[in-house]
Length: 157
View: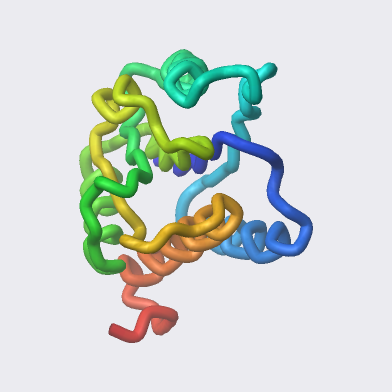
């Protein structure tokens, strides 16, 4: 199984990039993993929130393959524990999922078309975080989940 992190927005900010890359490298010890930064559509500032979300959705849906398992990060998604996210990953691996995609939406979140396509909707927190921190939190949590699956000492439950 391959894990992919997709994020709509700008490239990683320099002050947080090293930490994101560190956790990404650690995850690679368990599963192949890569980041895809999906650029904000051109003329985004001229678009309404609804139109921008639709354009972003079109881009995401074009990139997804039929069998990709999509986990959409969404504020209305389910909040789960670190052990529960590790179970989600294990189930996907056991069911021979080829590609597990974690998607971070744009500034206004994800369009309903993407949320409808999502296999799972996950909320990291009731708090609002900057996109750059969400990337770091996501990478750290997936690394934590991998260590839980291997019963390694990183996670102290």
